[in-house]
Length: 108
Image 1 (cartoon, rainbow, N blue to C red):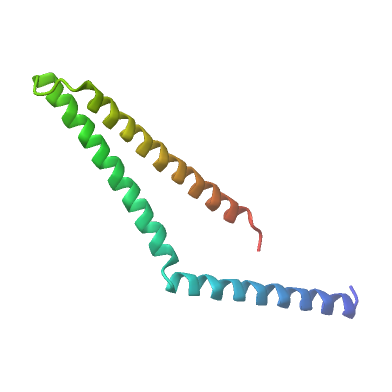
Image 2: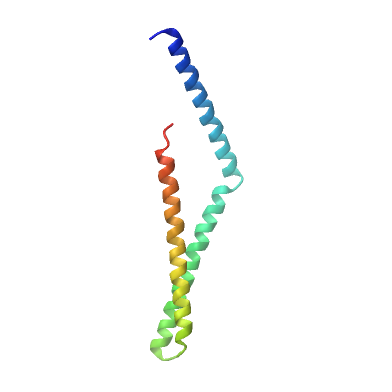
C-alpha cells in the first residue's frame, strides 16, 4: 500500500469521525431541548388512555352483570374506545421498534 492511499484513507476516516461527532452533538442538543421527554410523555399518555378505557369497559361489564345498567350502546361505545386506544398504542410501539431497528442497521 502506498503512502497516498494511506493518507486518503486516514482523511476519509477523519471526515467520518467529524460527521459522527457533529451528529452526536446535534442529538445531545435535541435531548437537552426535551425531545426524548416529549416521546416519553406521549407514551405515558397513551398507556394512561388504554388503562382508563379498559377500566371503563370493565366497570360497564360489572354494571351490566349486576343489572345496574341496561344501556348496551354505552358499553359498545366504551369497548370501541378501548379497542382504538390499544390499536393506537400498538401502532406507536411498532413504529418505535422500526425506528430502533433502522438505527441499529446503520453502520458507523
